[in-house]
Image (cartoon, rainbow, N blue to C red; front, side, top):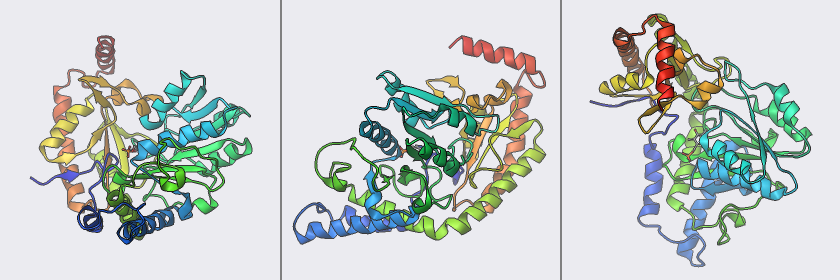
Length: 400
Ligand SMILES: *Cc1c(COP(=O)(O)O)cnc(C)c1O
């Protein structure tokens, strides 16, 4: 059975052209780009080309690109750098719906003498810019806010946020791991100071990413050692990964306009048909400001994990809004921050598409989902019994 992969916000298939670009750097060209000999020099040239390709995708200068090992490293490095550069400021602003790569750094910083404001979101997952404005003070070192949410696809008004941040003189970091390749970006006209991206979300391999650091922004490296990346990230370069990220960035630029249009059309068809065919379900997130490839749908009275297991039987890969931690069902922090009722909180499924998604794959999901939901609801003792469902959920949570 072939796999229908609709979990592209978790990771993506490596593009065959990316594999092809990488291969010589796993075999023939194994030199160290920092070496003096010509062999090393050939590697340095490959890294330079990749840096140009990534810079082009972001509308940045190549000197502003720092290669990292992943999106998580980019987020960690940006946050630490912003704080180290302004040791007198002790306040950070972020949101309740960030990726753990940001949230868990902020949580640790709270134990190290920093105060953190976690901005709330409304039922659509959107921020209140007045709350941001009210939170910004002269003591705010850093505002770190994601471009687009990985779970719901909700896109934040990043430039409007950035203008307010700049007014107060804080550094503005954006986790754009989900936005890169899906939304056109241009750092030349942006208010963003630092921006995180990750290779494996844009059809490059895992273990490579990049951090954009605007020229003039004071930067302190997370990793200390050699002089690689102009002293901003020590460690011998992951040349195959870097070459792959460069190629992937080039392909994203090439495909962005057409692919996102196509993904949006397929996503909308999937979403609208499911909403029409299945009673008691709704879309989570801001449907007007949203990534073109993502839909997160809440199916009342059933468990997302159960839906995933049945989808899996048909070879369909999706994701639930909740991260299953050691057998206990922990509802998603994103959906919880949005104030979703318990009845939908546990039954939410994310489908995330990519440029390889086909009409036939969408047809298949549309075909099987209604019967999966119906089957699970028939088994659910709480069908049409919101009170009973709530009580059972509360008991489950109490037992954890
Ligand atoms: C995947 C993801 C990350 C982490 O990137 P890795 O390369 O897996 O470390 C960070 N932020 C967002 C929004 C993501 O979707």
